Image (tube, rainbow, N blue to C red; front, side, top):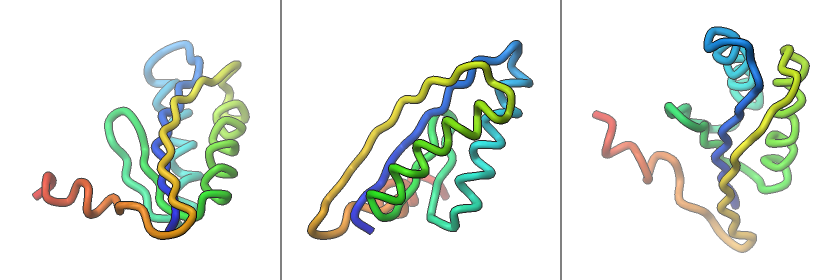
Length: 98
């Protein structure tokens, strides 16, 4: 695992229920990738190979549009270490969630 990303997908939606429905579809897609991920209140973190993660980030935008959003914005954080491992989600947050 040479990378991790955090993505906050912000689809345009007519109300909060619609926004949650669209974001849930994006999270369902992330789950379907089989990669380790962690859903937080503002963003979802995903661990894996850099190139695969960049493809997932791109697809998240397409999922939101196909789910009915007329437009979508995203805030993305990336950690990449081509020669080695990055800190895992588990090492970062497990001690805080008992």
